[in-house]
Length: 286
Image (cartoon, rainbow, N blue to C red; front, side):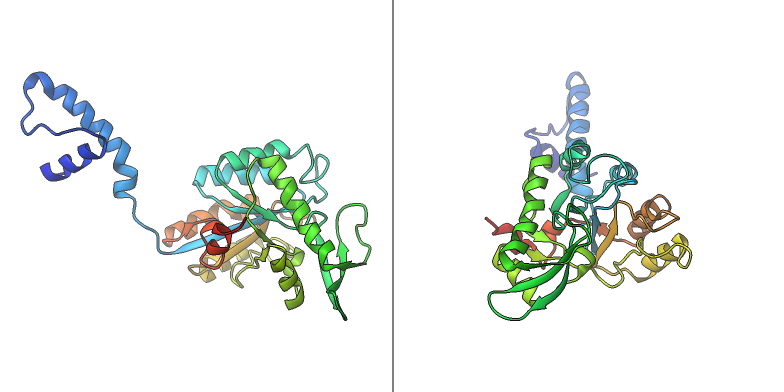
């Protein structure tokens, strides 16, 4: 680095460079120079990423949750979690007390959170008339598997219930976003959710990472190769913290090679707080 750059770096940490340090002061200046370089190097030399992708993870049986956390930490990747209180391999549901410390730790690491509806409630159909009513079917909770008719207010309360629980367990305000289970929505449902403060988040076609597909017909290697080939800048990616039906689990085989492979292609990872379609909504949410 030339003398001018040296001066600029030192000025950033409040030091004035000496043009020709005396032998007595040289060692101290050298130490200050190394300290200054260490402090500013990440900001000064990091290359801006113009190819963001947005990895999102929905809850599931949580059997791979610890592994996922380790991979994200190792790769220094931040994601957005969409959470419902689903049945888990261990504990009292993915938003229950057993998993609360896990969510708290993810918040401390800088991840973001949003609702997936508390009882993982599927939209089934719009019903005619006013006010808005919907046919729904939860896949978790006491009414799992039973169809019901809900008003728009009931549906909004279900979204908010998961968001409130996330705030309890993470200590962090969730994003004013939600994801409908299965991505199943209608224009009327989306308008209803928006009126009560939540924007819906789907995923890109290439961002469907395939962990829900049967491993007997689609191997992990095929899913990895497809994602590395097809993902494009700006895509929202979606996978889960464990899928009951897949016999060959996706995350242990695919997650880290996928992240590393996308990085090698020049992609970076961001949360939905920074997504151009949602950041203004998030910034102005009450």
